[in-house]
Length: 213
Image (cartoon, rainbow, N blue to C red):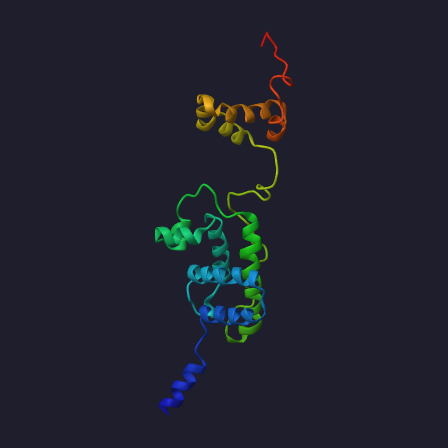
């Protein structure tokens, strides 16, 4: 009788989030390509740490929303920083960071992992309590980065001030053997020429000397 009761309790035990994640990863290791697995494993480990290993019936959309809200506060290579500084993900997110995760990483790594995970979990675990309404739809990036910022573009006003009024160019200007480090970007600024084009100029023949200026 005791044994039968124990078996009944075991069979009705509510699955936990870690069990669902482990099942998803086990399936994906058999069929997913290596680049996707390289995303799935760390992102889902992060999801588990942030949400906690709670019973799947207790997971709410607020948990998913909170996970993605926290992402916008994390720096790139957050995992290394957590390890080096011995911080949890939430502790690291609570600090100020000059640069946070990019919109591309947010979409291509984190949304791209959690979306198929939720879809598979709803399909395979809904009859054991996994909420069928959990979704990544409508979740948007709220970090401090701009989409496409690493592509070729014009400098912002703040970037120009930092570049041309910063201590580096000032030091180059005052150093006889490094003055070309100062003049090359300065000529580029006032002529619109690329640095490699400026480097092809011969000061003796290609530059007109204006005695007045």
